[in-house]
Length: 603
View 1 (cartoon, rainbow, N blue to C red):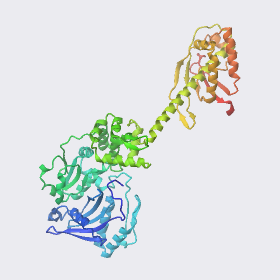
View 2 (view 1 turned 90 degrees about the vertical axis):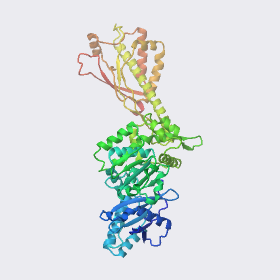
View 3 (view 1 turned 180 degrees about the vertical axis):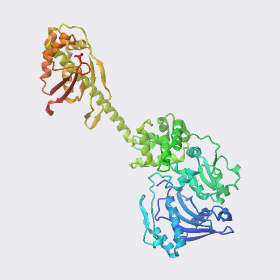
View 4 (view 1 turned 60 degrees about the horizontal axis):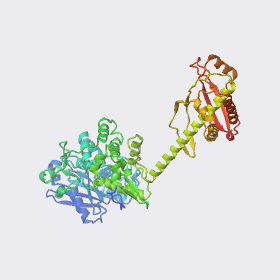
C-alpha cells in the first residue's frame, strides 16, 4: 500500500450509515452498522462531505440519476480515509461506507447491492449482510470476496482489486470518467501541471464526475503519490482551503465555486468539466522526448480501452523522466546508503536534466522525494523492488533509452565494472591466442612448401589474406563473445622469416603451443593447405601460381627442425580438410581450410 494509506486496518469497512438532509438544510445521520460506532469527529466529517452543498436539497436534482462519488479526509498522521457514497436524488439521501481501502469499483458495487437489499428485502436482511461483511477476514488482493452465509437476497461476491496491477479504463470508473471528461491536449497539460505540483482545481455540477477526475488525475503519477492537499469533494464550509499557499488537488462543486471570489484564489490551474475548458497561468511543458512519446500514444493507440495501455502510457512516461533515479544512490565507507540529488542530476541525460533541475531543487517536489525515501529504505533493509515501474525502467534500458543501469542496486555497480574489465581481459587474451595460432599455421605452411619444393626459385614477396571466424568460448562460467573479426589481414612472410632467423621463432613457437593447448578454434577459413602432395605442388608450379617463398639452405635446415618439433608435439592433434572453391575453378591458389585443434588429452 502507498505511503498515504492507513496501516492499522482491521475490518473491510469502518462504518456504514445513511445521511439525509431536509428542506431546512438540517443534516441527520443514521448509523447502520456497527451501531455502537460513536466517534463524533468522524461522524461530523461524514455529514460534512456527504452533503457538500445545499443544492442537493434543490428540487431540480430530484429527477437526476443516482450518483456514485468518493470523498477523502486526512487524519492527524496525514493518512487517508475514503468515503464511498451513493446519492439518491429521489429521497435526498446518501448511503455511505467509510473504509481505509481504496477499492472504488468494489465499494460502488457493494453500495448498489445494499440499496437493492434495502429496497427488496427486510431490515434483517440488510443487518445480516453488513454483519457478515464487517466480520469477514480481509481478503488478499486479487481474491474473491463472497458473502454466502446471509439470506439469498443478501449474497454478494466480487473480486478484490490488486494494487500491483495497472488499472484499466474498462474496470476503473474514476479513470474512465477522467478519460471521457478531458481531451488529449488537456490531459497532457494537467499531467504537466501535476508533475510541477501546481494548485489544481476541478469544478463540475456532477459529484460523480468531479471526484472521479480528481482521483483519475492523481493515478497518472504512478508509482508516485500525491503528497500535498488532496480533497476530491470540497464541502462549502471549507472553501478557505482554496486560498492555501501550497500545492493542492481539489474538486469543487460548481454551485460552491460560483460563490467564491476568484481574485482571492491566486494562480490556479482550473478545469471546468461542464464547459470542457482548461485555463492555466503557467507554461508547463514536458521534455521533448517524453512529450513525443506521450502524445503519440494518446493519439494513435487503439487499444487504450481494451487493456491497461492508458495507465501504462503514463507509467512509461514517468520512467522516461525519473527512471534514472538509481544513479543518485551512494554508499560510504561504513556501508551506509544515501541518495545525492547532485549526483543524480549530473548522471542524467542532457535532454532530461534541465527539466529535472526545475523539479528537484533545494525544495524538490514531494512526491519524488517520498518515492526516493521509500526506495532507499527498501535498499537499506535488503528488500528487492520489482514492481511495474521497475519493469518499465528495465524495458527502456533494453531499448537503449537510458545512459546507464537504472534498476540495479548500487552494490551491483562495482560488480558490473569488475565484470566488464574481466571480460575485456578475456577478449584480449583470446585475440592474442588467435594471433599466435595463425602465426603457427604460417610457420607450418612455409616449412611444408619448402620441404616439398626445394628447387623453387620464386623470390617475389607476397601477402595472403586470413579470414577468421570464431565461436564463443567459455572461460570459467562466463561466456566470452569475441566482438572482433579479422578480415583481409596482411602478413609479410619475409619479415616473419627474419624474426625466425634472429632467434625469435623458437620463443614464438613455445608461446603458440601453450596458447593452442588452451584455445579451441572451432572454425577457421584460411588459404593454406597443410597436406599438399607432390602432384598438386607440381601442378601449381606448372601453372605459375605457387606462392611459396624460396629459402636458403640454412633457412631450410631451420624450418625442417621447426616443422619436426611442431608435428611431434604430444599435446596437439591437427586435422586439416581442404576444399577448392567452386566459384573459381581457374584459381587453384584459393583454398578453404577448416582446422579443429583439440587437446590430446580430450581425444
